[in-house]
Amino acid sequence: MSWHGFKKAVNRAGTSVMMKTGHVERTVDRQFETEERRFRSMETAAKKLQKEAKGYLDALRAMTAAQTRIANTIDAFYGDAGSKDGVSAYYRQIVEDLDAETVKRLDGPFRTTVLEPISRFCSYFPDINAAITKRNHKLLDHDAMRSKVQKLIDKPSSDPSKLPRAEKDATMAREAYETLNEQLVTELPQLVSLRVPYLDPSFEALVKIQLCFCREGYEKMAQVQQYFESTVRDDYSNGVLDERVEQVLQSMRDLSISGLNSS
Image (cartoon, rainbow, N blue to C red; front, side):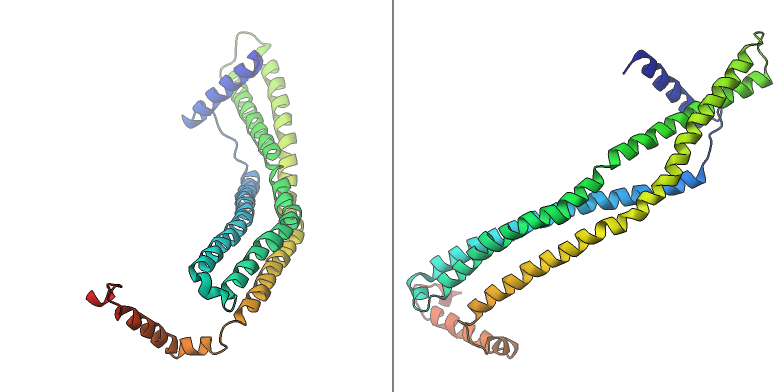
C-alpha cells in the first residue's frame, strides 16, 4: 500500500469511529442495502453449491470404491463355496465395472457441465466484492467531506478559501460515490436475476448424470439379482428369512467349538 493509500485508510478508519460516536452523520441507502443482502444470500448459496457439487463427485468415487472393497471381501469370504455358482465373483466384477467404467465416464461430463460452470460463476464474486468495498470507501469519503463542509459553515474559518475548497472536494467525493453506487444498485439485481437461467443447464445436466448413474447401477445389480431366489423379498416381508437365519444360527450353536451355546 502506498503512503497516499495508507493515509486514506487511516482517515476512513477515523471517519468510521466518528460515525459510531455520532460526530459524523452516516448516509443510509436502503435500496443498496436491500440489493447487497440479496447478493450476499446468492453468494452464500452459490459457494455452498460449489462445495456440495465437488463433494458429490468425491462421494460418488468413495461410494463405488467402498462397494469394490466390500465385493472383494465378500468374494474372499465365500471362497470355494462362492465358486460353485460364481455369484460372489460375478458381484465383484459388476461392482468393479461400475467403479471403473460408469463413474469415470461420468467424471468428465460432470466437471464440464456442472462443476466448472458453477466455479466460473463463483469466480466473479471477488471482483464484485471489491467494487462493493470501493463503494463503501467512497461513501465514507463523501460523508467525511460533507461533515467537514458543515463544520466550516457552522464555525467559519479565518481562511476564507477553506470552505470553497471543502465544498469542491465534497462535490467530487459525492459524484465518485454516486457513480459507483448507481452502477451497483443497477447491476446487482441483474446479476441476481441471471442466476437461474445460468444454472438451468447445469441443473439439467446434474439430473441426467444422476439418472445415468442410478440406471446403470440398477441394471448391473439386476444382473446379480438373478442368482437369488425371486421369493427373497416376500420371504423377508413374511419373516421367513428370519427363520432361515435362526436355523443357521442354531446349527452354529450346536457346534461345541463355536462357543455360542454357552451364551
